[in-house]
Length: 257
Image (cartoon, rainbow, N blue to C red; front, side, top):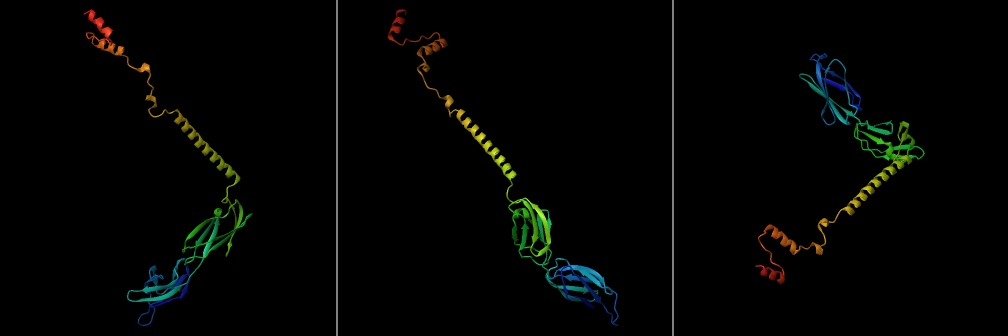
């Protein structure tokens, strides 16, 4: 059994070939065999059943890794293989969508070269972006972040003549109306803080000191008089006589006994 294919392919190519299977007399045998495609890391990438009397086609993925690949053909009793090489492809696709620049690595190796972007306007801006893109990886560059002032800019990318166009960007700097808006918000915020602090101070002034409502200076009128005490005692116990405070009162009581 023989397997005939090419030696070199690029990502996205189609591998075309023939499988020849002969009998003992040297005549071709029409038989179905299994074809297995192994990538550069020796993992199965593709499998299908083909006829030995027809040319087969096996498409390679657009991001097929570079290196040596292997194609194996198996019948019930026989097996054969053939090796081929997939080359490196370094390629970027770029396109504009409103104020965003999309960058996609459509090659089969990492893309590490910087991208140079020219924004042509009243104030020209030259932007250099470092990249580290894996195959099939896409990044989005917001062009608004690359300019300081709002306006209309022409866009071009060094090495990519297909990228041309005009975009309207807001820029990083605030416009006059934006300044007014931020100023108004700042004024409202500061006024709110002022009112809160003012009410807080008013509350502190009106609040009595701790225990202040219980403190009171003592005067002579606040003393408890002896007459009041005697009156309360006599009222509670009428039969008990209260002795007089001085000697004169005591002598008067003795005259009437």
